[in-house]
Image 1: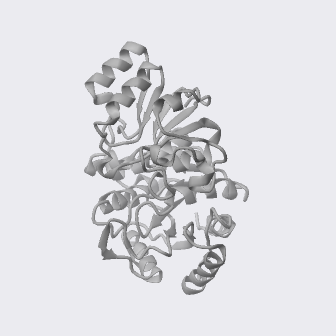
Image 2: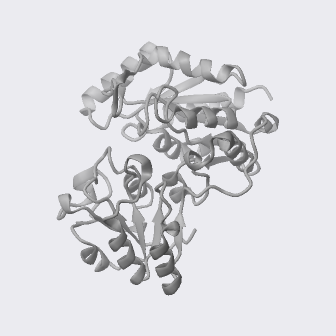
Image 3: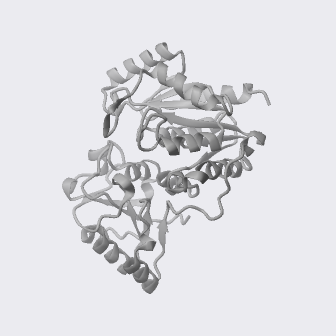
Length: 351
């Protein structure tokens, strides 16, 4: 991946702490690459105003205003339900290509498969990066991760968009600080943008999801003694649990880190699915892995962005007492309690 990217991020009315997952993560972890965000509903504000981080990255109303910030790439920063490419964006993407901006797309609809955009990109010599396009020749999983020496830790969660990727990215340097050679295995479009490699697991044909996860872990394990795998979905999510189980079975984690948002009591957009108490959910998640390789939940990472500092500290302490596990909000209070638990598990794990 080029390191001189200057992203103009398209958020189109959804630039928000919970709605613009891709935009938010890129701003949090690579702010030096972001020149601005397009969202007419929040124009005139900064990333700091909207998200609470990102400094003075401006939010603009139109593509023309964004173009004045001299980007060299347009990044689609939101993931609408189903990952479809809205018709209203075709004209905007066309203008971006005509202005020589690379296209970075994490939607399920591939920009490179839209005939008019593909032809325009070819005419102007512009690269389209469809991040969810699966690699060729994926094999089915057959448990090959059992033979690697590296420790594999997977983030799991009570719901989607709850902090599984963010937790692993927060942990990366912290675990390395314990003297462990560590790799981040990106399994979603946002993680791929930040890490520069990975596989969009949720775009892989169902029979090969576990195989793609297996190959990703095997590749990371060649370079590291610890692999932090980005989790996806939830084992109780009626829409996305198939991806969750495929990732679990392919990556065969040795341990899990449970991610949860204390204020969320039901699956987002599926309110009829209530989230069980965290102690019960931990037991469910451990049971989900036990048949192939036991993987205890060794720590809890909470997303407390919508709580006051006092309430957040209170709930962190409460969860730690209830679960008996190291617990933190890795963004708000730092990742060390979880990083320490992972390091101890890694050093103590029988080889």
